[in-house]
Image 1 (cartoon, rainbow over the protein chains, first blue to last red):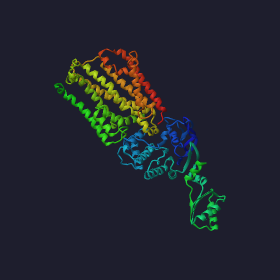
Image 2 (tube, each protein chain N blue to C red):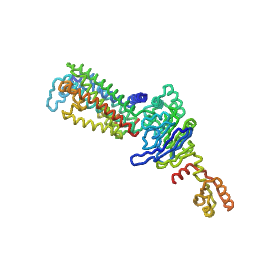
Image 3 (cartoon, each protein chain N blue to C red):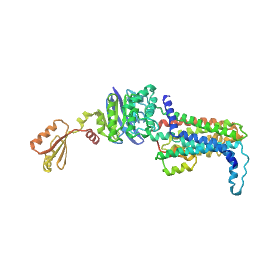
Image 4 (cartoon, chains in turn cyan, purple, yellow):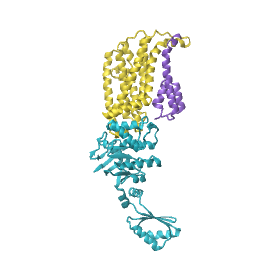
Length: 306
Length: 66
Length: 254
């Protein structure tokens, strides 16, 4: 069952096309990473799903119900963490969660219970200061707490880690990983390693177009090239190896920097063995031979470049 | 002059309001150093020299967000 | 409805924690206390000053002078303070983005506007009442003549003008951007109203006259019957402005 379906959605601000016929769907219990550079349309996509913006075309459904701009009923199924969550500085976290709970229509006993539970989850239990004195990381954690108060079927987090220091990022990622066990999550970021840590499915957004979507590990296999790094003892050997390798059919890309040769192979698992055979056949003396795992970054760069 | 003294019990509460308002504004100003515009000295002068309206200006358009 | 209630509570807390109550309380206490006293003491103050040998003799002040001071202070200082306190009521939230989360939680945009207006109107009424009662008690204490014709209508007109200004502030907040855009538009609209008010033929149709003719209503220079229409028109205008505010806020980017 699909929790979210985005169907052919476009968004224009005056002359500027921010989203261009974007379609994707997020199945239940998956963690969907929406990646793209700044300005690719990630925030716009999320605001559209929450009904804060009116799309110029297309439609979206959450758990089968259509999203309507303005005051959409589907929001009861959604928890939303904006890119920079802003709170009322004069309220305490408990008061803020109470306000959120009341708006979503939770009974007050439930609000109390949920508030404690969530403040525990995000590590803000016992913090009775006003939100005005919070650090960015604390605000981000409170942001996750408020998003989860109505036990949403879908949690939407817009760049939750981008503005944080490494400590804060790790905390947020840990919390999010915890949340993905129970809730479907959409998580946007331009920090690809963060997405890799949380998500199993990704979509790559570039200049308003969804270039690619699918399972993260499959995508890595299909799209990125296995790489090999070879360190030689002298530049002469490296130069010779370069000449040999450049003509091989399974070598996709070759780069040499002094004594180091970086080879990208066309995607096939046996190719690394082939390369190894040639190395031993030629009897090159290597200081180091290292396999480089494909990363999301490779996928991203290749997709966006293409 | 005697009349002014006669009405002193009515004048004092008014002076109290002005003083309290200025004091509350000054205390806030000392504890915070963010202003939407202007600087600390400017706001101190406004609070002290412009009765009633000075502190009100500080609170409504002067002080930064909490 | 539950969104409206929750947001009203939030507005009430905001009022007590953002110094707004201190501002409004001291302003209206000050106006209520100082207006009658100033009227009473003005002749003495002039005699003390003695303006370079020039003696100004003022007639013995009456309760009417107290109300003259009161209306002058309320319509100037009172309304200006109201503008200052409430000018950011919407723009603060929009520039900071504090509404985003609450709207994503299902709070309706109408509830935001209506809750804000309700709470602002409640506070204006409360502090208007405080100022008015203190002024009246002081006037009774300080002056002999203390009964006035059409006092209630005159005060009501002033209060209604405040209610109109509050609606105007909210409306301006929905059609402008930035921190001071709303304040600027409200002031511009009020200044246009003030200028229009100098044409006596237009006064009947001008809400501003509700805050300028209060003394004249007490003295009988302006008849209540002449201003009943203005009151009705202002109620209608206030409602219309609010409906427009709701409409424009629906389209507003948050």
